[in-house]
Length: 228
Figure 1 (cartoon, one colour):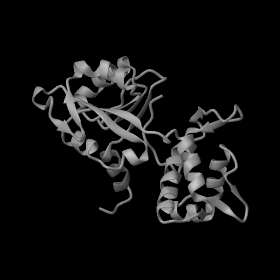
Figure 2 (cartoon, one colour; figure 1 turned 90 degrees about the vertical axis):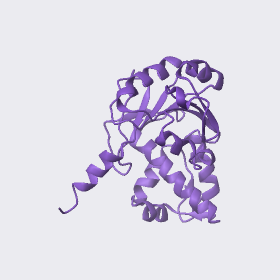
Figure 3 (cartoon, rainbow, N blue to C red; figure 1 turned 180 degrees about the vertical axis):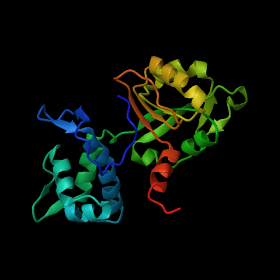
């Protein structure tokens, strides 16, 4: 299923993904999209040494109603008590398990240009469940150079490396004209989820999860509200 990253505060009742919650319910994808935002805020509170928070406080910090937060979390169980609130470390742990980021996922990065270097050197991945495990590029001059902690490999090495590392997630940071071919090769090699930075909508099988990050789209969204 391909989708464009959207505002997690909005609700799209048409997009529903089936999530294993003991077979009890189907959970709207927009709810899943808000869980990482809740986890990020809870982790901040945890670093501040906070033991307890409330849906009211979370809502004020995030601009989401407390009722929406309680409803979202109720899809996955009962995490707090009325009048007591949520135990911050416990809820962090539970959300990490629900999002499956209670361990580190290896990520394949395709594209060793400026954006690829920035992504590979970003220090915020590993302590939140991800690491750039392998980098690939088609430019012979970039091969064997170091990007982050990985050395750039040729595209031909991608299928074997993906299998050996058990990678399921890839990031595409290549020019737009190369993005579809790269996506096809990643999927053929066994990748199941793709984060695409190229300004293009990829054509992929329905079982492949694709999300997009295009700063220009967000800038264009913002300029609509600005005065000339």
